[in-house]
Image (cartoon, rainbow, N blue to C red; front, side):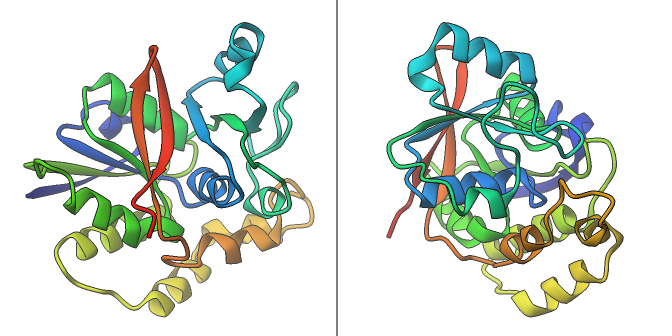
Length: 236
């Protein structure tokens, strides 16, 4: 298997083979928590208006709208993009639509580039994601690991480290999760979560996002009726 690591929206649009789309702070940590709390599926869209349009036209797959613009819950959405907020929501049996400025945008770009399969991922499901990809039949000849970064335009330590963690797991190595947490906590991206002037970023989001391999499932994306839909896979 040829493994390539790419970054940001520009590389997502040029991805080939299988794609692992990373958004640690916070989209795909929040998505994993939603699945752990019972969500049936999550439809991933690049733009807020797309999510609102799905709710208007296809309410059966839009029980909950979840996402952010500049860290804040968009008007008309039920929840923001906070793992901490999601951890207290009952998602049982619900269909979710998620829109963020990095992870879901990257997923849409990888889908448009023809990547297959696509998994969305973060530290909390990284090990399960590697296991799921290695279990694909046939095994993909190429995988592009996409670290989506801040707003899809600036590299972010947490996503870059997650990309390297995934590559190591795919190649049979097991990096030290505690060492990763220390590196990321020392980085600049975490500081906004402890800034009282930015209450949209909850300090508990960081700890939840850095619980490496917390969940035993991956989040595989398929195209259904023209939409990119994530579901749990690889449950043990």
